[in-house]
Structures are given as structure tokens and as C-alpha cells.
Image (cartoon, rainbow, N blue to C red; front, side, top):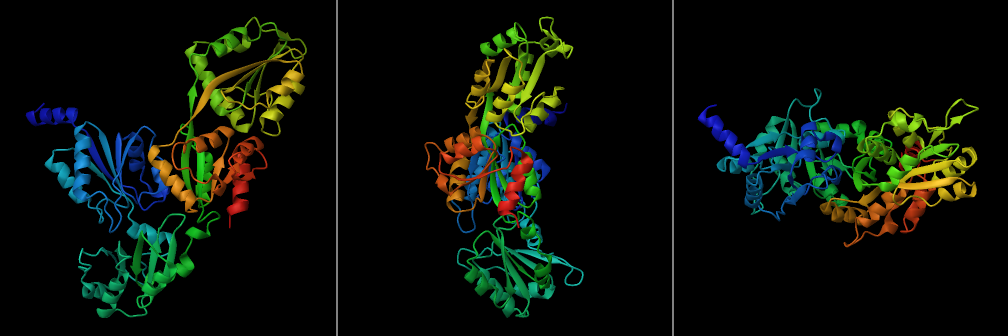
Length: 534
């Protein structure tokens, strides 16, 4: 190893690293795979104000965050302070992600931040992002180039100097005869358009201003160079927005598509445990919705769990029939983790000599019940087929079905969350069955602290169409995340609930209730498209 290599190794041992990454214009689907991975792996994330809530919700709960909150014309954290933060955090040996809107090198001052890192010998990487200059027009139905209209496009900063002046060569821009894209130019729109007109641009040249592009709340106003400023003012266009000037702007009338999707323009919060990927969120996104995945709860396995050990020791002894009953996929997962921790073999559990044979069926009587299709699917992954899944996926219906199906004097071992539904057990006791109610895990409410205020403001401002809930615990977790802070008005929330029990929990907080026809993702999607779809 050379001396230089040795110095590099020593430096890396005491110093962290910084990644400057572009988060794109806001739609989660435009986030690069590399940046998405860095969000999950970094120790600290230094982010701008324009990063969408959909993307911010992907930040793990344990990750440190620093909001440097830069808007056009409003820099609560000056650039030199941002540079200092990056250097300081990296020198602590941390993996630092500098998360910037769009692309870090397109008017993102990424070059200045890298210069600061170089001066301090901080290792760094740059991860390009999808720039709003191309993505936002595309989402508005405006191709920035088209062989029948123009063969070039040009990106210009519309950000004015402190004295309000613009350093733009309008004459050269007009001669280019290409599509002109002005970033950060909304406040300077009258001056930009007047400059183009003075340089000889046709007053009838199509132009558009595009607000909050790629997000559910995106808007577009189209006019001409001569009247766009007035139309934008009448529409109340605000930041972030970009200005597009060129003949291609006329194509938006026929090429618009984003808002035409079934759930285009809609934004939902999907509550879920952090460990679980959300099939519901993916399906809503495919239909055009913007989805903030909010891990309102996480599950904690109860360990040690003497009640569970005792139940397994007794399994199949002195009863004609033994049932294991699961009320959630999380319960199935926790059960198998417990078996592994206790070094128990599943074969011994289900086929042990102590089990009594079913004389009619000719096999050992060990049966499995599942509350619904998702839980049954989780069991199937482990090679177990549920003997009983009620037609209606609820605790009450599961209890009724078990009471009818289980043999007389059988034992029902319920494996579930610490706060399980009270509707499951009464039918079993009335049927004279022995019941063991075993808590395998507890649910703990969680949300990254910096997201609480953001979500509360979005609810208050009417930016959230609805919140989905797939269990009573997700309702409680969602509400509890705001404890000790300025709570949103829960009466403003449209609660999309998977079942009656979940709906009953949401109703306690005054939410407006919508309940799926059955407790399944298909029924949830069907309900959402019927209520909010085009």
C-alpha cells in the first residue's frame, strides 16, 4: 500500500462522507434508485424545503434530519451555514445525505457545497436527480422539444438579484428560437416576459406557467408572452413554479395526461407499520394518486414471553382438538420468530406423539384459523394452509366461525397483538371452548418528529384527500403521533377504513368514515376509486 493510500484509509476511518443527491421535482416515482437507497442508509439527511412529503416520509425514524429550508427569496439557513453543517457532520464520521430538489447542479448551488467539502478533505459523491426543467413540462403535457416546433431547449434562472434586476441576455434567447424554461422566475415573471417582448419575440408566442409540477396539486396556466403574467396573477399561481415559453406550450391542450388518470390530482396518507411495504400505496400510485406512506405504528415482539412458552408446552395435550388462531400477518411473523428463538421444530409441534388422532379423519387434530386473506397468505408462505378463514374478515366473524367449527372441549390458542379485539373471545366461551389469549407483539405509535408538523399543516390546508386505515391500531397510532403537539382537527379527515372495527376506532375521533365492503385491499381500492376517481 502506498503512502497516499494509507493516508486515504486513515482519513476514511475518522471522517464520514457526503452524498449530494437530487430528489427530483416531487413525485416519488421520479426518485432515482441510488437516492432512494441513500435515504434508507444515511446517518443524517440535510434537506431543502421543496422536498415533497411523499419523499420525506421515506426517511427512517432513527435518522437525524436537518431542514435547511431554502425557498426562492427566503433563505432561513444561509449557504455558508449549510456548508458548515455538511462538513461538521461528516467530520463526526457520519454518512451525510444532502438532499436537494431537482438536480443538485442545476441552479442548486451544489458546486459551492462541493468546494467546501474539498477544502476540508471530505469524501463526496454526486447523485444526479431528475430536473424539473424536463419533468414538470412533461407532466403538464408539454414536450420541451418536438421536431415540428423546435429542436432545442434552454434552461435559465429567473432568480433576480438583490436589487431586483435580471442578468439575462434576452436578445440571444429570442434568436435561439427554442423552448425557454425559466426556473425560480415566478416573482420576476412580468420582467421576464417584458424582456422577451422588447427583444422582438412575437407577442402571440405560446407560454405557460406550471405550479407544483409532478405533485397531486400541480396546476398549469397557459397564455401568450403578452398575457401570461396577468393570467397567472388571476389564478393566484405561487411557488414553486416554472415558466415555459415556446410553440410547444400549445401542445398541452391535447397532450395533458397527469390529471386524466383515475386518481390524478388526489393525495392520500397510507398508514402502515414501518416494516411492511404497502401494496395499497403501490396500487393507488398506479392509478395516479400521490401517496404519503406514514408509518404510524411499528410492531415490537414481546420477549421473553412465558405465556407463549407455556402454551406451546401444552399444545395438543388433553384436548380433542387444538386450534392456533392468527389475527394478522404480524402475528404469524412473530409466532415463527418465537419458535426459532425457543429452538422448537414445527414438525414436533404439529405431529408430536402426544397429539390425539382424529378417528374419523385419520390424522392428528391440529388446526389453524386466520382472520382474513392477508393472514392466510402469510401462513401459506410458511407452508401452512389455514383450515378456517371467515367469509367476512373481522374478529367477531372469526369468533362465530370457530365456535361452530371447533370440536367440543377443544382449545383455542389466539396469537395476536397485545390490544386485540374484544369481539373474538365471547362466542368461543359461550360454546364452552377453552381459550388461551396470547399477546405475541405490541404496536407502538411512531412518526419521524419533523413530519408531525408537516402533516398537520397539510391536513389543515386541505392538501390531503383522505387517510387509509387497515386496523384499529393504525388509527390509534396515527392519533397518538400528534400527542403533545398542535393536533390537526381530526374532524377534517376522511378516514378510509378496511372494516367496521377500524371504522369504530376512527369514529371515536370524529373522523368522516368510509368503510370498505370487505376487509381486503381489492375492496379498499374499489372504494377509493368510487369516491375519488374520475
